[in-house]
Image 1 (spheres, rainbow, N blue to C red):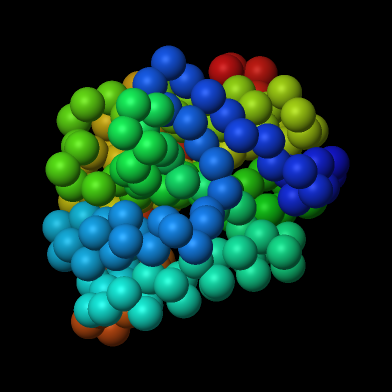
Image 2: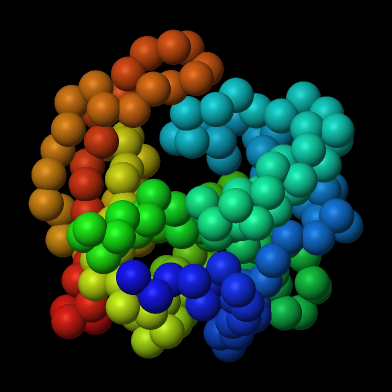
Length: 187
């Protein structure tokens, strides 16, 4: 699987309204705004952040995940204001299946503006054009209607439903997930 290009030099991606770039230490304030809001992190299986130090450590952890070739987490930045509005990621790379999972999270202040659909489409196009990945999956808890709608707009197909499939670290319970899939030849 030639995903190494993604870890060697993941290029900055641009849409009409946004750009997708790597995390910087100066992003801590915007990340804290995102991760400290319960409604924003509700479907992420994590508790909200309580202080800026957690945001700063998150940037370090995200960069380490990239350096270790495990996860690619990128900021979604507004072109006009240069504010980080959310995050988009690729993770769970599977060489045998030529697949990876996509994840996304958007500051609640910016929900329902087409931001995630626009930026995810750009990321998906880049990944399918730059690598031999054949499948991108999304795993979404049933209650996360917004993410399910984004998957549908991006032409992901629902392929499975798994009961009690993901651990919610907030309350130590297992949650159900819909599994969505997008194949390269259908994009």
